Every structure is written in structure tokens, then in C-alpha cells.
Length: 232
Image (cartoon, rainbow, N blue to C red; front, side, top):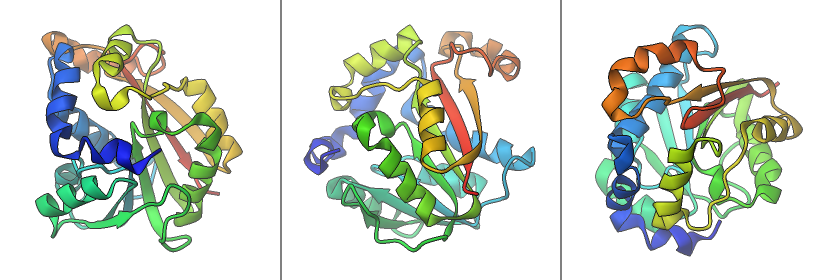
């Protein structure tokens, strides 16, 4: 995960993202919000405690910040990213809503046992798979005992997702991850109580059918999936 790889896209990130997902019928804000809304749903269902200290790992230009503010307004949020340019863009947009911290790709300068929640939203496919255990172990270090790691990733079995990734300039080096493999990697990194839900089965023109998705989360056909694990 090279800093320069993402620095070059920081100013145009939203435009490039929007172009790559145009066949979905949705915009980048839709994809940013549904993830935070899903976490809010986990809290309301009692699957995790309400987070007061949140780490957004691979936060980029801060696209999730408005939705953390919407669903978890009282939480303290730290945005961590390898791209200084992306952090600069995010800081200029949301300077009062989050703290922006640079990540060197190995160890974050943040304390042990600190966060209630770490979110990794479609980031790991940019990191060589051989490094995943080390990255997840670093996230585990920063979570408090009982804290939650929530990872969203693209589903390589969904053809529209694969097409969107292939069309996206900043995904040119991405290698998608099967959910089963990622669950095993999280276990190897020391997480427990690991669960997986598949998400986003219907594109925009079929959004009226989306209420059906609540009963489809076990089908490995959604455009993305969400894995939740806890630090013992």
C-alpha cells in the first residue's frame, strides 16, 4: 500500500469513484452511508456496544465522516490513512469533526486498547494479502478488549462489482478477497466471534426490492460483504 498511489487520486477521488459505480445507479455517498447505518443496526440489535471512540482505517478523504456524525454524533473519531494528500483533503473538509492521523503502513502512532470500534471500509483489497494478518493484528492492538472490528469488502463473486473495480483507476492494483478467506485471516489475527453478512443485492433501478435483502444476507451474491469480529 503505497502513499503515492493514493496521493495522486485525492483531489479527484469522488469523481473517479462515481464514474466507476455509475452502473449501480447510486452515488458514492450512498455507499458511504449504508456502511455506517449497518453498524448502527448492529448496535441496535445488541451485536456490539455503542462506540464512543472510533477508528476509521483507510479513511481517505473522509467520505464516511458525515455519516459517523449522523449516527454516532457523540463519538470521538480518528481517521487514519497512508495518503497524506487524502488526509489533507479530509482535514480541509471536516477539520472540526475528526482527527486526521498519518499511517506509515506498519504501525500507527495510536495507543493500545483504546478504540471501541475500528472500521475498514473497502481498504484491504489495496493491501497485499500477505500483509493482512499484520495489518489486522495492528488494529486488534488498538481496540479495547471486547471492541469490534467491522470490515466491508467487495465480493469477487459479484460480476457488477468486478466490473466496477476493473473500471476504477485507483483500483488498478486491487486484488479482491473472498469472504471465507478474510474470515480465516481475521481469526489468525486474533479476532473471535466472527460473523459475515452479504450486502447490496439490488442495483438502483431495483431499489424497491431492497427490503428483501434482510433475508438474503447469507447468500454469497451481494455486491459487498461485511465481517464483524471482536477482540477477546
